[in-house]
Each structure stands twice: as C-alpha cells, then as structure tokens.
Length: 228
Length: 255
Image (cartoon, rainbow over all chains, first blue to last red; front, side, top):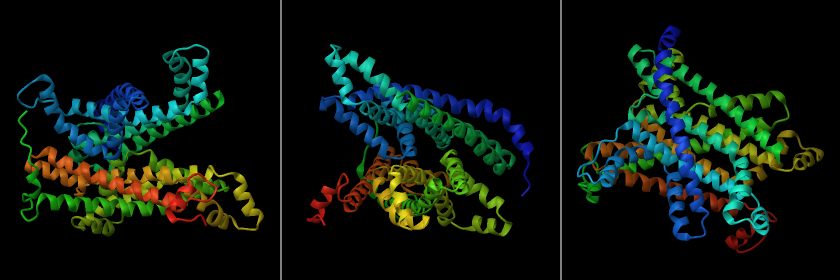
C-alpha cells in the first residue's frame, strides 16, 4: 500500500469549497428550521388537548422509529407529489435533491429536537410553574420568563449533541448523489483511483470537527452545572 | 395527482424474475434482523468491557476506553462503513485483502457491515452502560471491596448486575438505533429492508407501496424490540426498586 498524500492535498479546495460548504449549509439550515418546528411540536405534545398532542406524538414516534435513509427516500419521492397537491399542478413537480434534502433533514430533526425540548421543559419542576401562577403571572408569562429559560439551560448540551449527530448524518445524502463532504471525497477518490487516501482524510476531518464540538458540549455541561 | 396505487404489486414478480416482491422484502427483513442481532449481541458484549474500562480506577485502562469511544463516536457511520468496506481490504496484508474482496454477495457485504455496526454500537453502548455504572452509589463498589472481592468480582457480582437493570430503558433506544443504523449497509450493496424497498421502487415504479412496506417492517421490528426490552425490565426488576411491582403481576408472586 503506497499512500499518495498529494492526491489529498490537491483535492482540498474542492473538498472544502464544494463539499464542506454543502455539508455545513445543510446542517445549519436543518438545525435552525428543525429547532423552530421541533419547538412547535414539543408545545403540541405537551398540550392538554388530545386532538393536538396525539398527532404530534404519532409524527414524532414514527419518524424516530424508522431509519433516516428510509426517510430520505420517502421524502425524495413523495415531495414532488405533495408539491403538485399544494400548487394544484396536474403532474408531480420537480423539487430536486438539494431542496429535498433540506426539507427531509428539517422534518426529521424536528422530531428529535421535539423530544429534547419536551424533556427539557419537563425537567423544570412543577412547583416553578405553580409559583409563577401564584404570584399572578399568566400561563404564557410563566412559561416565557420562568420555565423556558431554565428548560433551555437544561437542554442546551443535548441540543448541541443532536446538532453534532445531524452534522454526521448529513453524510447520508450520499444516496441522493449530492456532493457533500463525503460525496466530494468519493468523487475525487473514484476519479483518481485514490479512494483509500480520500476516505481516510474525510474520516479524519469529520473526527476532528466532531471531537472538538463534543468538547464544547462538555464545557456547556460544566457551565450549566455551576449555574444551578 | 395521477399516482397508480396498487397493493397487488407485492405479488408481482420482482426484478430477479423468480420471487415476488413480497418475498424479496421479507428477505430484506431477514438481513436486517441478522445484521442488527449480530451487531447488537457483539456490541453489548464489547460495550460492557469498554464501559468497565471507562470506569476503571486505572488511568491507563480509562484512557484506552476513552480513546476507543471518542474514535468511533465522532466519525459518521456512513464514513465508517466505507472505511470497513473499501479501505480495510487495501490496508490489510495483500492476501487477506484479496480474500475479503473475493467474498461474493451477500457475505462480502454482510461481514464488513457487521464489523462496522459492532464497532460503532460498542462505543454507543459503552457510553450508555457507563452512565448506568456511574449512577450507582459509590458505596456499592466499596462494600464489595471491603468484603474482599477482587475488582473484577466487584464488577461481575455487584456493579454490572445492577447497572444492566438501570440502563434497560436507554438500552432499548440504543437497540432500536442499531436496527435503524443497519439500513446504512445498503450503501455498500447489502440488500436489507431499505435496500430491497429501494430496489423494488426502482424496478416497479411503485414508490409508495415499497416504502410503506419498509416503514411497516421497521415499525414491526422496533415494536418487538420495545416489547422484548419491556419484558426484560419487568422480569429482572429488583424488589424495592421502581418497577418491581410490575414483576409481581407478571409472575404472580413477589419472591
């Protein structure tokens, strides 16, 4: 086995310029939109009205028990039909792998974010809400200024951990032939016959990023512990 | 909306010209089960060892356990899958690598997939078990040592029996995770459930029937995982701990 590190060095502009840019875009887009949708789902799941909480529960539990790859395929093929239904077009509309990936990851992550949020909100003791109501705050005010600030603090480490997992999971867009970081490595590796070098380099870069990010989580965990 | 929905597609002949789609999907379920069961058992065994290393008093053992977990948790599973499938045969001595490459369908894909899922699962289960071990009061281990047990005996007879019971709920989601991760094996060409559904969709164009069937398959498998773990949790519940009353109902007596 002779390693050719030149193959890696020459590939770096493409790997990061095209591949990593896409991976980060997808991660950030799915994380931010997923967070919004996830919060909404969490509020729905905690609602006292079964008509609201049960559908949210079914959505979250179904998405959480099937593989992400299957979800990617589902939405990739389902989206054109939904698009046609929404716009009233007679034929399935063309969405494209890129948008499809962003929508899929948003909807998928929302289910996981929802559960983290729910656990976070439920980790604040009931007495806090009761105390808030007792001093004359409305439910909304108590939620906003008493429960949520504490909940966010409790769930921050889990949320960041989930974003790291999302960052790793975006590599699965490989099955839609999108050029994310791994896809870029695979393309160059196949072109030059240097798969071994490229895959090892891709693995190393992922490792460095995820390991550093997990240190940040450790730091956050320590910070929140002190704050209590 | 002009999608031609038809449930009868499942009894049509699949792309191999011999079996029905229903049969190929069931074969997919079989491979998914084989993959997740082997990876689950191996991960539980080695995960326990790594968890013990991670909690061991020795600095070196702790270091080895930590390095293992940090390596395998921080690389995307798909990248690991490619490392096992494409890179391993190249870096091994030549005849070993050639032997790996010459293994035909499906073992040539199944073995790297099991290796990949097991190494990854070991790291994840080790973290789950470590949390269980560390949630026990320190006095448990100390009492064992005071009674004259060796460190290994303390783990074997005092710590692990309690830790396993505590981690059953998080272990359930880890095992469901292994079932879900097994779908990544389709990227190296193993026709497990998602792979078979994808093949069916490509050949028959009955996209939604194929993926509905796969979804139902995963829901069923993971439903079984939840029920099995729930049974274990009740069966092994200790008197005095939360959940042991359920065991009374189960066995009819509180022994």
